Image (cartoon, rainbow, N blue to C red; front, side, top):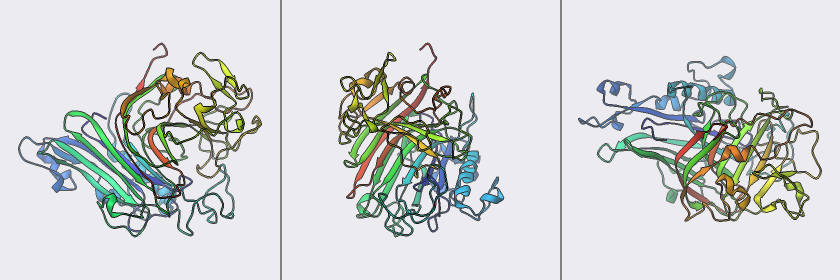
Length: 474
């Protein structure tokens, strides 16, 4: 995050991590802001917004890699590498557009090239009558509405997206750009502040950096509304190729070497300014990967692949659904730092309040009763969740140990032994199958405001986000 030449992209998804239908006039919901700084005037001809360049002597020039025409590409519009099958399919088109944007942004680096940080936005509305989302990877017919929010036909729409390309200000010393928009399709216009969107959903990510100094700072806002009560916004470090957490398409990102448990840490600075209300599952860190129940790597077969997530929720209003009287919401056992197993029926020793919720994959065949299975519709394949809460049990890994740690008024730099912790968390596997390699293809920070019953707003600042690989002996 200390590199002046930023690489950042944007992706928006509907409930089951697809596109479904593009928003009017917006193109496919993929965009990027990628540039290098240069003192060479010849780069002016490659910049797509000359007003973004301060060309006075001694000031750097911004050499943008992605044009606004690239960002507005939508179904039916060609670009290099687009396959015939994807040309008019919104889901496939978005996946291939991400690869195209990645080719424009790619940085040649050792040991591997990388493309961009990813801003992810997701709409939690689900029209169960649409038949759009599979159940644990299996196509299912429409069914009656139930626990999922939806105001009616069209509720799974993509957002209106506005881009403020990175420019120089402050006498040529400050770089600033951003994305913002709304899911409501009658917006007040580009660049509007939250004060102008009363009653409407809103999202905003602004990045800023002083040239040659410190880290990029990402300022984030997310606002729900009556029509859009379940929204998610994250900054993700994703795999540079293969499946990022939650997807079955080839993706692009900035993890040029994939971290594997237990040999990595994550360092970041987080300042939560508004929490998003009691339903805001704010993730200090969320890690995602994919492996099958038999321990094999995922191969794109949505019937047998399983997305695996672990999330540390720091909102102190989030309760522990895992309890001695509801052990079906707990993992079958907890593993201590010294590798001792504590089973969930050991009410004297199991750390129930360390877990918000555990749910098992819906395609698992050998689950230990009682159990809770994860929502079968919100990923293209089955999923497994291990959701954690601040607790003294996590102290050895540098994680929050008490409610309020890292929350509003407690901004700090965290160094999290994510690899060490993730090596000891319970994840389901079929009996007698070889242990899966826990290789993590997505690491992200942000919030999921989960079906709020009133308009809520979250605001936070993130910087110095770094994934640190460690040796086995470290």
